[in-house]
Image (spheres, rainbow, N blue to C red):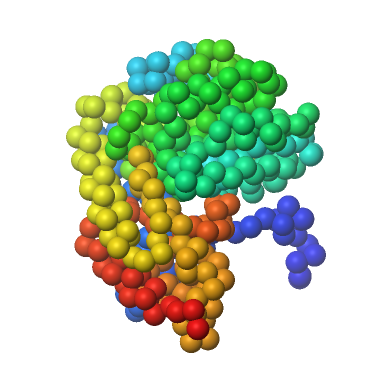
Length: 404
């Protein structure tokens, strides 16, 4: 059987670059190569004990049957309470839909709102899956670029310039994956003013890294009442509570969007794991400031960020900003394009990442996957010792590249 059996949507879909690089590094490790993996977007911390205990209790209490499609009422209410407590946002439990991770939540929204040819504005750099999910729902991503000089943040004028009668939505993340950039309240207010003049545009605000912030304060664009009925907030427990494998994400949305996502989820996946939901309930019920595990994790990420920035700035040709959240650095490495090492020529960031994997045994993710081909993404969700060794290897390998 050949590829003709497959649908165009899968043939035209790009493989996740982050998962691809992680897979390549695992293959090398299986062969006994000492690879340092800085490609994966996952906290290297364990789920807090109280959250794990809640899951164990759920098993003992036989919470192992089909859960409600949009999530247990108690969890949906706890999420609504969290949004009020931590973000000053007013949502009813009926406006919350719990899904199998924030990625699933976003896919639900796109499947519910997009018809063939509808346009979604996607600021670049973007998370790798945004454009592919839009295309899978028959939409068309409209990419607008924000470079390192702008701290990877878009302006109202850039948005206005690409709005057409076919514009259905915009999606962005703050703090950002892959850049770690954080929009301020004033910056979000300026964006909200644009959307206020276009009430038919849905704003999808991916806030999954909300709890991992080093300076400033997380703000949600949903806080601006004049556009709240246009906003879908996406969040989950994966990053802030080190619960990536539990697969719990959620949306807080206008009722019509929440109802639609409930409907489509009922046909596709049904409800998320009841055991995971009870673990998430424990996480939601504890304010962030009462979580020593969270505070310890964020402090560790800040220490690693500062170390990585200092070390990377010592590599000639690497140009970086100072991310205020998440756990990524996204340096511009275009100074190495056109350079060679023997028969190897670096034409783009993909070439550089493959070269560094081969020669330095460090796994990174090329910026092409994020809509920024001049950059690479470095995840510092690993120990300081590994960060120091990885950058040492990267510097040595880059030093062997020349213009000849």
